[in-house]
Length: 494
Ligand code: URP
Ligand code: ZN
Ligand code: ZN
Image (cartoon, rainbow, N blue to C red; front, top):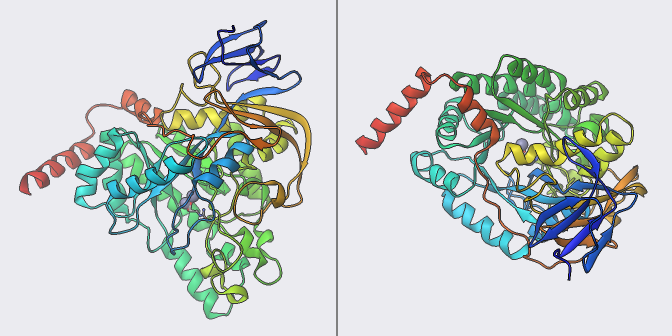
Protein backbone atom coordinates (compact mmCIF):
# COMPACT_ATOMS: atom_id res chain seq x y z
CA UNK A 1 0.00 0.00 0.00
CA UNK A 2 1.24 3.52 -0.79
CA UNK A 3 2.46 5.75 2.01
CA UNK A 4 0.43 8.55 0.38
CA UNK A 5 -3.30 9.26 0.24
CA UNK A 6 -2.89 11.09 -3.08
CA UNK A 7 -0.12 11.65 -5.59
CA UNK A 8 0.15 14.34 -8.27
CA UNK A 9 2.71 13.19 -10.81
CA UNK A 10 4.52 14.31 -13.96
CA UNK A 11 3.57 17.99 -13.69
CA UNK A 12 5.66 21.14 -13.74
CA UNK A 13 5.60 22.86 -10.35
CA UNK A 14 5.97 26.60 -9.90
CA UNK A 15 6.19 28.46 -6.62
CA UNK A 16 6.89 32.16 -6.10
CA UNK A 17 10.62 31.47 -6.40
CA UNK A 18 11.17 28.19 -8.26
CA UNK A 19 10.08 26.16 -11.27
CA UNK A 20 10.85 22.44 -11.43
CA UNK A 21 9.53 19.03 -12.33
CA UNK A 22 8.59 16.76 -9.44
CA UNK A 23 5.86 14.49 -8.18
CA UNK A 24 3.94 15.38 -5.03
CA UNK A 25 3.05 12.91 -2.29
CA UNK A 26 0.19 13.94 0.00
CA UNK A 27 -0.76 12.43 3.35
CA UNK A 28 -3.28 13.66 5.94
CA UNK A 29 -3.89 16.82 3.92
CA UNK A 30 -0.24 17.88 3.80
CA UNK A 31 2.56 17.68 1.26
CA UNK A 32 4.98 15.04 2.55
CA UNK A 33 7.08 14.25 -0.54
CA UNK A 34 8.35 16.34 -3.46
CA UNK A 35 10.59 14.35 -5.78
CA UNK A 36 10.70 12.73 -9.17
CA UNK A 37 9.69 9.11 -9.68
CA UNK A 38 7.13 8.65 -6.89
CA UNK A 39 5.01 5.52 -7.26
CA UNK A 40 1.33 6.30 -7.74
CA UNK A 41 -0.95 6.16 -4.73
CA UNK A 42 -4.42 4.61 -5.05
CA UNK A 43 -5.61 8.14 -5.83
CA UNK A 44 -3.26 9.51 -8.46
CA UNK A 45 -3.49 12.50 -10.76
CA UNK A 46 -1.45 12.54 -13.94
CA UNK A 47 -0.44 16.19 -14.40
CA UNK A 48 1.70 15.64 -17.52
CA UNK A 49 1.75 18.79 -19.65
CA UNK A 50 0.14 20.84 -16.86
CA UNK A 51 1.27 23.56 -14.46
CA UNK A 52 1.07 22.49 -10.82
CA UNK A 53 0.67 25.68 -8.78
CA UNK A 54 -0.22 26.58 -5.20
CA UNK A 55 -3.96 27.07 -4.78
CA UNK A 56 -4.77 30.75 -4.93
CA UNK A 57 -5.50 32.93 -1.93
CA UNK A 58 -8.06 35.66 -2.45
CA UNK A 59 -7.52 38.00 0.46
CA UNK A 60 -10.13 40.59 -0.46
CA UNK A 61 -13.67 39.40 -0.97
CA UNK A 62 -17.06 40.19 0.49
CA UNK A 63 -19.26 37.22 1.26
CA UNK A 64 -22.71 37.14 2.86
CA UNK A 65 -22.05 40.73 3.93
CA UNK A 66 -24.43 43.66 4.24
CA UNK A 67 -23.11 46.71 2.42
CA UNK A 68 -22.97 50.14 4.05
CA UNK A 69 -26.27 50.86 2.26
CA UNK A 70 -27.81 47.68 3.71
CA UNK A 71 -27.74 45.53 0.55
CA UNK A 72 -26.92 41.83 1.01
CA UNK A 73 -24.23 40.24 -1.17
CA UNK A 74 -25.55 37.73 -3.69
CA UNK A 75 -23.06 35.07 -2.62
CA UNK A 76 -23.16 33.14 0.63
CA UNK A 77 -20.23 31.13 1.96
CA UNK A 78 -21.27 28.15 -0.16
CA UNK A 79 -21.61 29.81 -3.56
CA UNK A 80 -18.60 32.06 -2.96
CA UNK A 81 -16.26 29.24 -2.00
CA UNK A 82 -17.51 26.96 -4.78
CA UNK A 83 -16.91 29.77 -7.25
CA UNK A 84 -13.47 30.43 -5.77
CA UNK A 85 -12.51 26.77 -6.08
CA UNK A 86 -13.56 26.51 -9.72
CA UNK A 87 -11.25 29.45 -10.43
CA UNK A 88 -8.23 27.90 -8.68
CA UNK A 89 -8.54 29.65 -5.31
CA UNK A 90 -8.31 27.41 -2.24
CA UNK A 91 -8.28 30.01 0.54
CA UNK A 92 -10.43 33.10 0.90
CA UNK A 93 -10.15 35.90 3.41
CA UNK A 94 -13.49 37.73 3.47
CA UNK A 95 -14.59 40.29 6.03
CA UNK A 96 -16.50 40.01 9.27
CA UNK A 97 -18.08 43.43 8.85
CA UNK A 98 -19.05 45.56 11.81
CA UNK A 99 -21.83 48.09 11.38
CA UNK A 100 -21.94 50.93 13.86
CA UNK A 101 -23.38 49.93 17.22
CA UNK A 102 -22.47 46.25 16.80
CA UNK A 103 -20.00 44.57 19.14
CA UNK A 104 -17.02 43.02 17.37
CA UNK A 105 -17.15 39.64 19.17
CA UNK A 106 -20.81 39.24 18.16
CA UNK A 107 -20.03 40.16 14.56
CA UNK A 108 -17.23 37.61 14.35
CA UNK A 109 -19.28 34.85 15.99
CA UNK A 110 -22.06 35.41 13.46
CA UNK A 111 -19.78 35.24 10.40
CA UNK A 112 -17.90 32.25 11.86
CA UNK A 113 -21.13 30.28 12.30
CA UNK A 114 -22.35 31.00 8.78
CA UNK A 115 -19.01 30.18 7.17
CA UNK A 116 -18.56 26.94 9.14
CA UNK A 117 -21.89 25.63 7.83
CA UNK A 118 -21.22 26.38 4.18
CA UNK A 119 -17.60 26.91 3.07
CA UNK A 120 -16.05 24.26 0.81
CA UNK A 121 -12.49 25.68 0.94
CA UNK A 122 -10.53 27.12 3.84
CA UNK A 123 -11.10 30.65 5.04
CA UNK A 124 -9.83 33.22 7.50
CA UNK A 125 -11.36 36.60 8.34
CA UNK A 126 -10.43 40.24 8.35
CA UNK A 127 -12.56 42.67 10.30
CA UNK A 128 -14.25 45.74 8.89
CA UNK A 129 -14.04 48.22 11.72
CA UNK A 130 -16.53 51.10 11.74
CA UNK A 131 -16.96 51.77 15.45
CA UNK A 132 -13.63 52.00 17.29
CA UNK A 133 -15.08 52.59 20.74
CA UNK A 134 -12.97 52.39 23.89
CA UNK A 135 -13.99 48.76 24.64
CA UNK A 136 -13.32 47.84 21.01
CA UNK A 137 -9.81 49.33 21.12
CA UNK A 138 -8.74 48.18 24.56
CA UNK A 139 -10.50 44.83 24.85
CA UNK A 140 -12.28 43.39 21.77
CA UNK A 141 -9.60 44.02 19.15
CA UNK A 142 -6.71 42.64 21.23
CA UNK A 143 -8.73 39.50 22.02
CA UNK A 144 -9.73 38.94 18.40
CA UNK A 145 -6.16 39.47 17.22
CA UNK A 146 -4.96 36.83 19.69
CA UNK A 147 -7.71 34.53 18.32
CA UNK A 148 -6.30 34.80 14.80
CA UNK A 149 -8.01 37.77 13.15
CA UNK A 150 -4.91 39.83 12.53
CA UNK A 151 -6.03 42.31 9.91
CA UNK A 152 -8.78 44.88 9.71
CA UNK A 153 -10.09 47.27 7.14
CA UNK A 154 -11.04 50.86 7.78
CA UNK A 155 -12.78 53.22 5.37
CA UNK A 156 -12.00 56.87 4.65
CA UNK A 157 -15.24 57.22 2.68
CA UNK A 158 -18.90 56.08 2.83
CA UNK A 159 -20.85 58.00 5.48
CA UNK A 160 -21.96 54.87 7.33
CA UNK A 161 -18.49 53.33 7.47
CA UNK A 162 -15.84 56.04 7.46
CA UNK A 163 -13.44 56.83 10.27
CA UNK A 164 -11.82 60.20 10.89
CA UNK A 165 -8.06 60.55 10.73
CA UNK A 166 -7.86 60.61 14.54
CA UNK A 167 -9.79 57.33 14.75
CA UNK A 168 -7.53 55.76 12.14
CA UNK A 169 -4.53 56.75 14.25
CA UNK A 170 -6.11 55.03 17.27
CA UNK A 171 -6.71 51.86 15.24
CA UNK A 172 -3.18 51.92 13.80
CA UNK A 173 -1.67 52.26 17.25
CA UNK A 174 -3.65 49.32 18.65
CA UNK A 175 -2.89 47.17 15.61
CA UNK A 176 0.78 47.99 15.90
CA UNK A 177 0.96 47.07 19.56
CA UNK A 178 -1.08 43.87 19.23
CA UNK A 179 0.44 42.56 15.99
CA UNK A 180 -2.18 43.27 13.34
CA UNK A 181 -2.28 44.96 9.94
CA UNK A 182 -4.62 47.82 9.03
CA UNK A 183 -6.07 47.81 5.51
CA UNK A 184 -7.35 51.13 4.19
CA UNK A 185 -10.01 52.04 1.65
CA UNK A 186 -8.51 55.36 0.59
CA UNK A 187 -10.87 57.83 -1.04
CA UNK A 188 -11.57 61.41 0.09
CA UNK A 189 -15.17 61.47 1.29
CA UNK A 190 -15.67 65.24 1.06
CA UNK A 191 -14.43 65.44 -2.54
CA UNK A 192 -16.77 62.62 -3.56
CA UNK A 193 -19.77 64.10 -1.71
CA UNK A 194 -19.15 67.51 -3.24
CA UNK A 195 -18.98 66.05 -6.76
CA UNK A 196 -22.09 63.92 -6.15
CA UNK A 197 -24.05 66.94 -4.96
CA UNK A 198 -23.18 69.01 -8.02
CA UNK A 199 -23.62 66.17 -10.50
CA UNK A 200 -27.07 65.47 -9.07
CA UNK A 201 -28.01 69.15 -9.10
CA UNK A 202 -27.32 69.18 -12.84
CA UNK A 203 -29.34 66.00 -13.42
CA UNK A 204 -26.31 63.83 -14.15
CA UNK A 205 -27.54 60.57 -12.60
CA UNK A 206 -26.51 57.82 -15.07
CA UNK A 207 -24.10 55.09 -13.87
CA UNK A 208 -21.17 56.64 -15.75
CA UNK A 209 -21.17 59.59 -13.33
CA UNK A 210 -20.14 57.22 -10.53
CA UNK A 211 -16.66 57.24 -12.09
CA UNK A 212 -16.70 61.05 -12.27
CA UNK A 213 -17.71 61.38 -8.61
CA UNK A 214 -15.03 58.95 -7.44
CA UNK A 215 -12.35 61.13 -9.00
CA UNK A 216 -8.77 59.87 -9.32
CA UNK A 217 -7.64 62.82 -7.16
CA UNK A 218 -9.98 61.71 -4.35
CA UNK A 219 -8.08 58.43 -4.27
CA UNK A 220 -4.68 60.08 -4.63
CA UNK A 221 -5.29 62.53 -1.78
CA UNK A 222 -6.65 59.92 0.63
CA UNK A 223 -3.83 57.51 -0.18
CA UNK A 224 -1.29 60.18 0.68
CA UNK A 225 -3.14 61.05 3.90
CA UNK A 226 -3.46 57.41 4.99
CA UNK A 227 0.25 56.87 4.39
CA UNK A 228 1.02 60.00 6.40
CA UNK A 229 -0.91 58.57 9.36
CA UNK A 230 0.99 55.26 9.14
CA UNK A 231 4.31 57.10 8.90
CA UNK A 232 3.53 59.19 11.96
CA UNK A 233 3.43 55.96 13.96
CA UNK A 234 6.05 54.18 11.83
CA UNK A 235 3.58 51.33 11.50
CA UNK A 236 2.60 49.07 8.58
CA UNK A 237 -0.44 49.71 6.42
CA UNK A 238 -2.00 48.07 3.39
CA UNK A 239 -3.77 50.26 0.84
CA UNK A 240 -6.43 48.11 -0.81
CA UNK A 241 -7.89 48.16 -4.33
CA UNK A 242 -5.46 50.73 -5.77
CA UNK A 243 -6.60 51.94 -9.19
CA UNK A 244 -4.56 54.84 -10.47
CA UNK A 245 -1.13 56.30 -11.20
CA UNK A 246 -0.80 59.04 -8.61
CA UNK A 247 -1.76 56.74 -5.72
CA UNK A 248 0.74 54.18 -6.99
CA UNK A 249 3.46 56.82 -7.25
CA UNK A 250 2.75 57.96 -3.69
CA UNK A 251 2.90 54.39 -2.41
CA UNK A 252 6.17 53.80 -4.27
CA UNK A 253 7.71 56.96 -2.83
CA UNK A 254 6.72 55.95 0.71
CA UNK A 255 8.19 52.49 0.17
CA UNK A 256 11.47 53.99 -1.04
CA UNK A 257 11.54 56.19 2.07
CA UNK A 258 11.42 53.01 4.15
CA UNK A 259 7.79 53.34 5.27
CA UNK A 260 6.01 50.01 5.80
CA UNK A 261 3.39 50.62 3.14
CA UNK A 262 1.92 47.77 1.11
CA UNK A 263 -0.64 47.78 -1.65
CA UNK A 264 -3.16 45.63 -3.48
CA UNK A 265 -4.92 45.88 -6.82
CA UNK A 266 -7.74 43.95 -8.49
CA UNK A 267 -8.82 42.69 -11.95
CA UNK A 268 -11.19 45.60 -12.55
CA UNK A 269 -8.25 48.03 -12.66
CA UNK A 270 -6.44 46.00 -15.31
CA UNK A 271 -9.31 44.77 -17.43
CA UNK A 272 -12.14 47.32 -17.18
CA UNK A 273 -12.42 51.03 -17.94
CA UNK A 274 -14.62 53.94 -16.88
CA UNK A 275 -15.99 53.83 -20.45
CA UNK A 276 -17.60 50.48 -19.58
CA UNK A 277 -19.99 52.37 -17.28
CA UNK A 278 -21.29 54.32 -20.27
CA UNK A 279 -23.94 51.89 -21.49
CA UNK A 280 -27.60 52.42 -22.37
CA UNK A 281 -30.03 52.82 -19.46
CA UNK A 282 -28.60 51.56 -16.17
CA UNK A 283 -26.53 48.73 -17.66
CA UNK A 284 -23.37 50.57 -16.56
CA UNK A 285 -24.32 49.63 -12.97
CA UNK A 286 -22.72 46.25 -13.68
CA UNK A 287 -19.34 48.03 -13.64
CA UNK A 288 -19.81 50.34 -10.63
CA UNK A 289 -17.31 49.72 -7.87
CA UNK A 290 -15.16 51.98 -5.72
CA UNK A 291 -12.65 53.09 -6.71
CA UNK A 292 -14.10 52.78 -10.20
CA UNK A 293 -12.37 51.39 -13.26
CA UNK A 294 -10.32 54.24 -14.80
CA UNK A 295 -8.62 54.79 -18.18
CA UNK A 296 -5.92 53.15 -20.31
CA UNK A 297 -3.13 55.15 -18.64
CA UNK A 298 -4.31 53.95 -15.22
CA UNK A 299 -4.38 50.35 -16.42
CA UNK A 300 -0.81 50.81 -17.63
CA UNK A 301 0.23 52.25 -14.25
CA UNK A 302 -1.36 49.30 -12.44
CA UNK A 303 0.48 46.80 -14.66
CA UNK A 304 3.70 48.69 -13.97
CA UNK A 305 3.00 48.63 -10.22
CA UNK A 306 2.56 44.86 -10.34
CA UNK A 307 5.75 44.39 -12.36
CA UNK A 308 7.98 46.60 -10.21
CA UNK A 309 6.64 45.26 -6.89
CA UNK A 310 4.85 48.41 -5.67
CA UNK A 311 1.61 46.40 -5.75
CA UNK A 312 2.15 43.01 -4.13
CA UNK A 313 -1.36 41.59 -3.95
CA UNK A 314 -3.82 40.77 -6.71
CA UNK A 315 -7.22 40.16 -5.09
CA UNK A 316 -10.71 40.11 -6.53
CA UNK A 317 -12.56 42.52 -4.19
CA UNK A 318 -15.48 40.25 -5.05
CA UNK A 319 -18.48 42.30 -3.91
CA UNK A 320 -21.40 40.61 -5.66
CA UNK A 321 -24.70 42.40 -6.10
CA UNK A 322 -27.31 41.15 -8.50
CA UNK A 323 -28.34 43.33 -11.44
CA UNK A 324 -31.89 43.75 -10.13
CA UNK A 325 -33.83 45.45 -7.34
CA UNK A 326 -32.39 43.09 -4.71
CA UNK A 327 -28.89 44.37 -5.51
CA UNK A 328 -27.56 47.05 -7.81
CA UNK A 329 -30.86 48.60 -8.86
CA UNK A 330 -33.06 49.47 -5.85
CA UNK A 331 -35.19 51.74 -8.07
CA UNK A 332 -35.04 49.68 -11.24
CA UNK A 333 -34.43 51.75 -14.38
CA UNK A 334 -34.72 54.92 -12.29
CA UNK A 335 -31.76 54.04 -10.05
CA UNK A 336 -29.24 56.91 -9.93
CA UNK A 337 -25.48 56.34 -9.75
CA UNK A 338 -25.51 57.26 -6.07
CA UNK A 339 -28.01 54.49 -5.28
CA UNK A 340 -26.14 51.68 -7.07
CA UNK A 341 -24.56 49.13 -4.71
CA UNK A 342 -20.79 49.38 -5.20
CA UNK A 343 -18.84 46.27 -6.09
CA UNK A 344 -18.18 43.65 -8.77
CA UNK A 345 -17.95 39.87 -8.83
CA UNK A 346 -14.54 38.38 -9.60
CA UNK A 347 -13.65 35.44 -7.33
CA UNK A 348 -13.72 32.82 -10.06
CA UNK A 349 -12.08 34.75 -12.89
CA UNK A 350 -9.40 36.58 -10.86
CA UNK A 351 -6.67 34.02 -11.49
CA UNK A 352 -7.63 32.92 -15.04
CA UNK A 353 -7.73 36.57 -16.20
CA UNK A 354 -4.27 37.30 -14.81
CA UNK A 355 -2.89 33.99 -16.09
CA UNK A 356 -4.14 34.76 -19.58
CA UNK A 357 -3.28 38.46 -19.72
CA UNK A 358 -0.15 38.26 -17.57
CA UNK A 359 1.59 34.90 -18.02
CA UNK A 360 0.45 34.00 -21.54
CA UNK A 361 1.42 37.43 -22.87
CA UNK A 362 4.86 37.27 -21.25
CA UNK A 363 4.25 40.26 -18.98
CA UNK A 364 4.57 38.12 -15.84
CA UNK A 365 6.63 35.04 -15.13
CA UNK A 366 4.77 32.05 -13.75
CA UNK A 367 6.56 32.69 -10.43
CA UNK A 368 5.35 36.30 -10.33
CA UNK A 369 1.85 35.03 -11.04
CA UNK A 370 2.07 32.64 -8.06
CA UNK A 371 3.42 35.40 -5.81
CA UNK A 372 0.68 37.86 -6.78
CA UNK A 373 -2.20 35.42 -6.46
CA UNK A 374 -1.11 33.19 -3.56
CA UNK A 375 2.24 33.48 -1.76
CA UNK A 376 2.24 37.23 -1.10
CA UNK A 377 -1.24 36.95 0.44
CA UNK A 378 -0.04 34.20 2.80
CA UNK A 379 2.90 36.40 3.82
CA UNK A 380 0.79 39.50 4.24
CA UNK A 381 -1.72 37.82 6.54
CA UNK A 382 0.38 35.39 8.56
CA UNK A 383 -0.56 32.19 6.75
CA UNK A 384 2.83 31.20 5.29
CA UNK A 385 4.10 28.42 5.11
CA UNK A 386 0.86 26.57 5.80
CA UNK A 387 -0.81 28.23 2.80
CA UNK A 388 0.34 29.85 -0.43
CA UNK A 389 3.17 27.57 -1.49
CA UNK A 390 4.12 24.04 -2.48
CA UNK A 391 6.58 22.76 0.12
CA UNK A 392 7.05 19.81 2.44
CA UNK A 393 4.77 20.36 5.44
CA UNK A 394 2.46 22.85 3.71
CA UNK A 395 -1.22 22.11 3.28
CA UNK A 396 -1.78 20.30 -0.01
CA UNK A 397 -3.62 23.22 -1.65
CA UNK A 398 -2.88 22.79 -5.32
CA UNK A 399 -4.34 23.93 -8.64
CA UNK A 400 -3.45 22.02 -11.79
CA UNK A 401 -3.63 24.37 -14.76
CA UNK A 402 -4.14 23.55 -18.40
CA UNK A 403 -2.35 26.45 -20.09
CA UNK A 404 -3.77 25.48 -23.49
CA UNK A 405 -7.44 25.52 -22.60
CA UNK A 406 -9.31 28.33 -24.32
CA UNK A 407 -12.28 29.73 -22.47
CA UNK A 408 -14.98 32.15 -23.53
CA UNK A 409 -16.02 33.80 -20.26
CA UNK A 410 -19.74 33.91 -19.72
CA UNK A 411 -21.79 33.99 -16.57
CA UNK A 412 -23.42 30.67 -17.46
CA UNK A 413 -20.09 28.84 -16.90
CA UNK A 414 -19.39 30.47 -13.52
CA UNK A 415 -20.56 29.26 -10.13
CA UNK A 416 -21.42 32.43 -8.24
CA UNK A 417 -24.93 33.70 -7.58
CA UNK A 418 -24.54 37.11 -9.13
CA UNK A 419 -26.30 36.54 -12.44
CA UNK A 420 -23.79 38.44 -14.58
CA UNK A 421 -20.06 38.90 -15.08
CA UNK A 422 -18.43 42.18 -16.13
CA UNK A 423 -16.05 40.04 -18.24
CA UNK A 424 -18.81 38.47 -20.39
CA UNK A 425 -17.56 37.52 -23.86
CA UNK A 426 -13.82 37.72 -23.15
CA UNK A 427 -11.62 35.01 -24.60
CA UNK A 428 -8.87 33.82 -22.32
CA UNK A 429 -6.34 31.01 -22.40
CA UNK A 430 -5.53 28.82 -19.40
CA UNK A 431 -7.79 27.42 -16.69
CA UNK A 432 -7.29 25.40 -13.49
CA UNK A 433 -8.82 21.99 -14.20
CA UNK A 434 -8.14 20.12 -10.96
CA UNK A 435 -8.23 21.92 -7.63
CA UNK A 436 -7.10 20.32 -4.37
CA UNK A 437 -7.60 21.71 -0.87
CA UNK A 438 -5.85 20.03 2.09
CA UNK A 439 -5.42 16.91 -0.03
CA UNK A 440 -9.13 16.74 -0.90
CA UNK A 441 -9.95 16.94 -4.60
CA UNK A 442 -12.44 19.81 -4.65
CA UNK A 443 -12.89 20.25 -8.40
CA UNK A 444 -12.27 17.66 -11.11
CA UNK A 445 -13.97 16.99 -14.46
CA UNK A 446 -15.72 20.36 -14.06
CA UNK A 447 -17.57 18.95 -11.06
CA UNK A 448 -17.54 19.84 -7.37
CA UNK A 449 -16.33 16.85 -5.36
CA UNK A 450 -16.79 18.01 -1.75
CA UNK A 451 -19.69 18.97 0.49
CA UNK A 452 -20.91 22.09 2.26
CA UNK A 453 -19.03 22.95 5.41
CA UNK A 454 -15.91 20.95 4.53
CA UNK A 455 -13.72 24.09 4.49
CA UNK A 456 -11.81 24.92 7.66
CA UNK A 457 -11.35 28.16 9.56
CA UNK A 458 -7.76 29.45 9.60
CA UNK A 459 -6.31 31.48 12.44
CA UNK A 460 -3.91 34.02 10.95
CA UNK A 461 -0.54 34.62 12.57
CA UNK A 462 1.21 37.97 12.89
CA UNK A 463 1.38 39.52 9.40
CA UNK A 464 4.90 39.56 7.97
CA UNK A 465 4.89 43.38 7.49
CA UNK A 466 4.27 43.76 11.22
CA UNK A 467 7.18 41.47 12.10
CA UNK A 468 9.45 43.32 9.67
CA UNK A 469 8.46 46.74 10.98
CA UNK A 470 9.13 45.65 14.54
CA UNK A 471 12.54 44.27 13.65
CA UNK A 472 13.60 47.42 11.78
CA UNK A 473 12.20 50.12 13.98
CA UNK A 474 14.11 52.15 16.56
CA UNK A 475 12.65 51.42 20.04
CA UNK A 476 12.08 55.06 21.00
CA UNK A 477 9.10 56.33 19.02
CA UNK A 478 7.76 59.18 21.13
CA UNK A 479 4.37 59.29 19.39
CA UNK A 480 3.65 55.62 20.06
CA UNK A 481 4.82 55.89 23.67
CA UNK A 482 2.52 58.86 24.10
CA UNK A 483 -0.43 56.76 22.87
CA UNK A 484 0.43 53.86 25.19
CA UNK A 485 0.69 56.11 28.24
CA UNK A 486 -2.52 57.99 27.51
CA UNK A 487 -4.40 54.70 26.91
CA UNK A 488 -3.09 53.33 30.20
CA UNK A 489 -4.18 56.43 32.11
CA UNK A 490 -7.65 56.32 30.47
CA UNK A 491 -7.99 52.69 31.59
CA UNK A 492 -6.91 53.55 35.15
CA UNK A 493 -9.47 56.34 35.26
CA UNK A 494 -12.33 53.94 34.38
O1 URP B 1 -16.97 48.91 -4.63
C1 URP B 1 -16.46 48.14 -3.86
N1 URP B 1 -15.18 47.89 -3.89
N2 URP B 1 -17.25 47.52 -2.97
C2 URP B 1 -16.85 46.61 -2.01
C3 URP B 1 -16.49 47.26 -0.72
C4 URP B 1 -15.12 47.83 -0.78
O2 URP B 1 -14.99 49.01 -0.62
O3 URP B 1 -14.14 47.09 -0.96
ZN1 ZN C 1 -12.99 49.20 -0.12
ZN1 ZN D 1 -13.76 45.32 -0.86
